[in-house]
Image 1 (cartoon, rainbow, N blue to C red):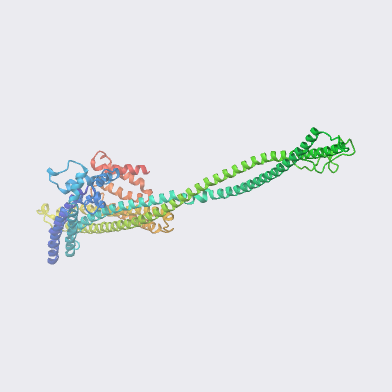
Image 2: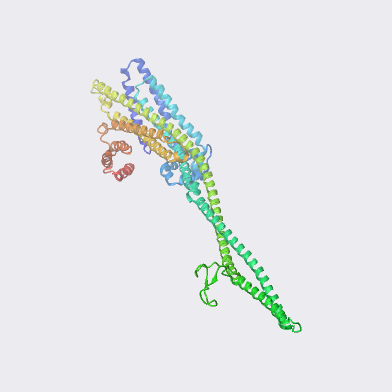
Length: 607
């Protein structure tokens, strides 16, 4: 705390007064008790000398470098942290006091560069901190010996309270460093969960895209197209076969016609052989036969080229030459024997259909090929996403282990800090009781003091000093408040951890109940914190008048009640605001009121 020096000064006065009171009043004790009291006082004096050597600021160096490495950390990393806005807000005092803590010779002091301050601080960090902590341990041991000799020794309990408070603060500060590691682990858990959430949609690309169904549908349509193409190609082949057959028949008929015509032309050139008696008859018969063949062959040529109506006849009821063709008495339903011209025209049409069908099949195959390429891409992406999820789950599981381990380590340190603060409060309470007893004893002894010795009598000096016990009561309240704040940190951290585990449970397969133990710890911390705040309020409620209505007592009371607000009991918010306003009224511009003004601004925004 920034005002530790002032508190230590007041505590020193209290200690000296209490010690003096004990010494002055000691003749009323039994000889053995007086001897034990004096021996205990010497132990307390030794403990005080050790305590005065303790430097509370030295422990803060750990906040700057403790989790950057076991020996000398990376100075670039340390200085980068020191420049970080959040870190600087928490630890700027530690950075500012590093040089003074190490008591570096002025000729060797850095000019202000954070790297230099860190370097000089780190060099002696381990040994200085160890020696500094040992001062508290040795002082506590000396006080313990004093209290074994004189359990109600006021000064011993007062010094014990101071020592335990310092130890509690140091442990709370160490826990903050461990919490930083836990927060880093929580960030890794969050990153793993975010990575899994980003990859998860890609694990079902194939099924959700419907691409396999598209491929199956396209392949079915392609098969139909291929079957249709094969059928058209067969039709074309049949047409080609018919055309080839008819072309053969046409060639044969044309050859027969040409042969018959050649006979006719030869007979026409040679004429009739009239030297023979039957020359005319023979010529006429042979020429008629050749002409008949010629006509028949030409008929077949025409029929082959243009087709026939094989079952049609000329209607005999009319003019034979002009009569209509009929089939079964009808003129609208003839049986057609197509000719070569028909087949050739049909072939042209079917050939176009074959080309179209072949092109359609090709297009379907190309589309199927593209879909299969897309399917392969989706499958690769699915495999990559699954691998990414497995990796993120492994990373997240390791981060969860780190998070829980660091949180447990921090909580153990916080529990120890709370225990020290609670023990400190008990010591302050014992000192308060002893102080009140000493004041009452002094009042009784003052009645026996002669008027001539009244001005120099210790009993006369102490009889009205009830403020001493009241001051110790504020120290007890401060220890309880410190414990409550640590409980609040536990409450916040465990609540945050529960939320982090709950959000990561499904992605990392942690189970549905993984967050419940942390919620239970958070609720236990809240309950204990409220109880500690109530104890602090109780300790400070009756001391305002005894301390001359000091304004800092009002602020301390407001701070204790504010703790109940941060634990969720917002019905006290107006009381906190009123008390802070009363505390700083007329002192708004004084440096001592700055902290209270900041707190007042915060709570006013919460209304």
